[in-house]
Length: 430
Image (tube, rainbow, N blue to C red; front, top):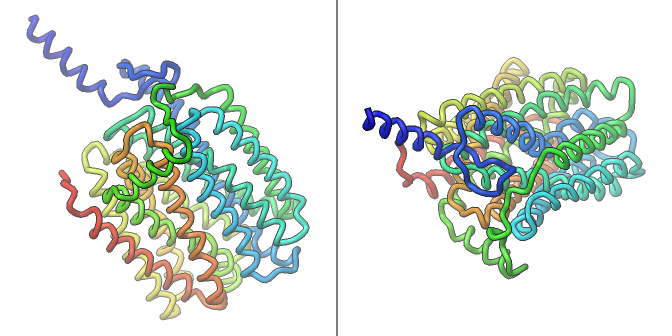
């Protein structure tokens, strides 16, 4: 009987080693399954909402791009810069907020970032020109980046191993709900207000995030685990990450996949509305349907990760992305039309549900807790910056045909696949 009890105790201990650390305690503890489920749900909802700053800031604005172009008397290429500026802000803000959170803790940098995001959103509403709007959009993205990078760093504080992969998959599922709602909401806002009303809505959502974080989030990084040494320590952290072949491989392969997604995000309003004649409302609905596929695949990935390695799930997503991009290029060149374009765009976006959570978990899994913020920041910077630079260049190729969009998506899908095999293939998989 005692042997059975000992065996049961050992099994229980093994099962609890992957459970999360309670946010209220700043130390690794073992919890019961009931407590772990409750705490995990709290973490998923709050942290997932914080990571949604990126899709909310970009996707809710997408249906307004043609209206902004008309209202501010700007070309479509110049109007796209307002989107690119936000994405660049999201990119470089992460590489600043991440190291700051490693040194100062997670909570206060997060709250300050959200407050600045709210202010920048309100100022965007008053912008009189594309130039000023682009500048303010950069500030908005830079501040909002704190929510993304610090949320992922908190997840790394609380989880490890396959639990981290499951947690990030769940965060991404919540995150990916934003692209479902945001473009539909953005399109509907245009029926009774101008594009400026979009930024009022973003400021209100920022207020909700600020209150939820202030009252629902405790500090998760112990003082003893904080990084000291200022700028030199930050540079050492980045240098260590950049010579980590596996981190670089996961970061670059996911970044090239994100570049394909950024091209889709920035080009699809013009392609689907101006070339194929869809209304902003129909575009928002279709964009939301594609995002639903993304969220669904992220949820599937989270369920599979306990039985299939994140490495295999990642390669499956990258292969699907490359295949969808190449097929889209063929469909566009042959002129099949929406009947071929729309399903492939859905398939392409859905593949990111396997890529994003697993690449993020695998990349962060190569680091230690002391540099989780820096690693999350560098990863996010690469993912956003490459797409932010490439997307407007694709726009310069013209919006009178869908070929530039399809060709660029196909190219980055193939490059993501090649990068994975060069840097990450030797990893053992089960």
